[in-house]
Structures are given as structure tokens and as C-alpha cells.
Image (cartoon, rainbow, N blue to C red):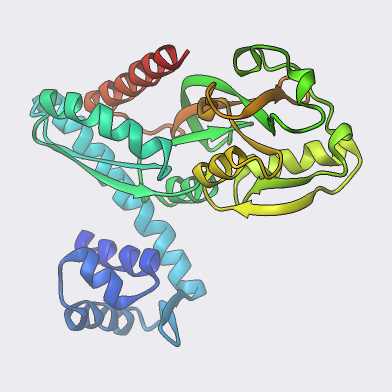
Length: 306
């Protein structure tokens, strides 16, 4: 198998489009299409269904892709090991993180990393936690800065910290007096049963945060009324600050100056923040240094906010 050919087919599958894959690979659409047609003729099998403008892998295509991803993964790990042996400090790190806290962290850490490893480049894919796991499983990225409740047995984790799931109530809410004077650092417990009649500001059902929260509502014995469903945490936080209803978000978004009071729910429900990578993956010295820089940065950031 030609490694370039493997990269072409994986790119088509990832993008589900010849034109987008060609753009990603810095080649013409015609040239990439010819590569695919040549391979399909050679194999005597269709690798993709052409459905309108989408390229969907056939059964044979999925078999080919599974092998291709494994081979390219071996290539990537081999290059990382050789780079470490040569101490060339060159290469690429592929990482996925959220468009919010993840991008802020990367903007802080990258200048420090670049100073130490000026010839190492990054390939970044911004995504939500569910999509991140898919990217890791496919081998599309080697690292993912993710928040999680449980650990996926397919991955290993470099743990960074934990943070509470916080309930924010407007100060004008009838139950706000239960919060006390320093709710933004003490987070007293709130029983969700007391909020059964409230319409909530909630995150999208596509997030792990929302899925876990829905289980807490099941325990409380009711399905929440949804006033507004936010696609980003920042939107949920800003809607909460407008005091139109209760909202939930991670502790790192708490603002002591906002017209809100804060509570914990469940048994002080908290999730872990980690950098995930495929189990058994060889991590280069540069990747390990990057992960340690991320941990140091996020620890310092939380201390600064405290």
C-alpha cells in the first residue's frame, strides 16, 4: 500500500467530500478523484458511495479505512520515536480541544511551547467532547483536551484537574437566599426537586455535560422545562447573567461579580479535565512537555481566579 494513497482515502472519508479533502491535501480536486478511481479499479471494488455531494464509505471502504488508519498510526508513532532518538525537535502535534476554554488555554501555552520547540507545528481541530472521542478513535488527532465523567477504556488519560458542575440562580430567585454570603466559593447544595417549576437554560443535548445533567433530573423525578438551549457554555453563562432563569455550567465559568448565586447539585457532582490519547500510543518528548505545560497553565489560571 502506498502511504500517500492511504492518506488520500482517509482524507476523503474524514471530509466526506472530494473537494474538501483536496483542499485539505493541497491538491486539485481532479487529481484526487483520479487517485480514488485508480485505486477502485485496482481493487475491483467501490470504496465510496457517491450520494449527492457526499462520499460515504462502502463496506469495503470501511475495511480499507480501518487498515489505513492503523498503518498511518504506526507511521506517526515511528516518526515520533525516531525524532526523539535524533533529538531533532521537529514534527507535528495533532490536538483537539473546545472552541472556548480550549482555545484560550492554547493561546496562553503555545508561545511558551514554541519558544522551546520552534520547529514543531500543530494541527488543531476544535470540537465538542463527543466528537473529540471520535477523532481520537479514528486517529485523526493524537491528543484531546477533554472533560469527562467516566474514562473510555480505549484511551489513556493525563489528568489535569476536576471542577464542579454548578447551578446558577438569579439573585432575584425566591430560593437565592439559600446560597449564603459566599456561594461563589462554597457552593452549598441545592435539591433539584425544589426547582421543578422553573424553566432552565441548558446546554445542547450533544454535550456530555447535558447528558449527565439529564440523569440528575431523572433522579429528581421530572423532565425539566427548557427556556433556552445553548450551543456554547459562554451563551449559557451570559443568558444566566441576564437573570431570566437557572443555568448550569462548569465551576471555571463562575463570576463572583455577576448577579447570580451558585450551588452544587447531587453529591457535589464534578467532572475531570484531562488530555486523552489512544491506549498504548507512544508520546514524544514534545507531546509530554506540552501536556505538562497545559497542566501548569490551567493550575495557575485557577489559582489566579480564586
